[in-house]
Image 1: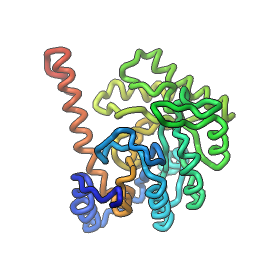
Image 2: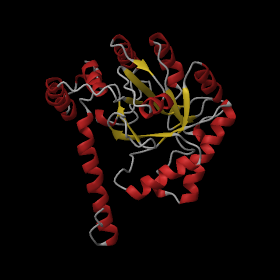
Image 3: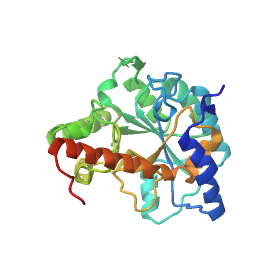
Image 4: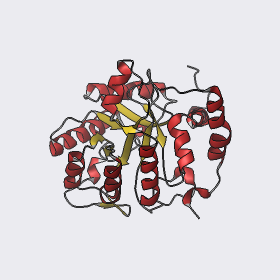
Length: 297
């Protein structure tokens, strides 16, 4: 049985309701560009049983997905090109940004050859404390070495920060946040010899906390970052906040028809329940810790 054969609600709604409705309405939205989120290209399930939360994509499924994108006429671009063309008001049909969080070594051993076959390059967001001169095993998984990183960069991959230690930034003090952002950027620049301008937020992005979102964007800008990506579900469009760009999560459970729905907008609806869940959890936490209703914004 193929990994993507298990039914789940988001897939059913996407394929049998939202995607057909978009086709009926004829919404193309050439300004919208999907930013795909990958993590590990392996058979490692990382302990997650529910398909929605898995962060691995098997090499076989990853190959199928990359070849589907190629055969569908997609070309990969980086975040700098995305923001530049959005700023110029240009449409970008058949464009995709491919990103990899954390810095797992299987991107180098399994994913690189597949992407080269398809003529794609991506952006790797590194948790720099886990990247060493020899493969470091953390929680049972090998991470890239600095030599691997340099070779990937030479193959056209862009490099970004994913903090130093991969913490939940909202749990830190401002000076700790600045260290996680700034030092990770500095280390990558020293190792590769090129400016690092993009950042990926670890864990679920706290879009419900507007004060923190503004603080994070200001911090990134002050440190010289030009873009940031998040776990907010959706496609990047003109007007998107450049420091918390939405992305599309992809894993082994994404069949070609679900991947197609994600890149053309049929999965954008998932941001509504995602955002509602965050706001409800945030308000409940405020009530439990303060004993009063959260202030309306």
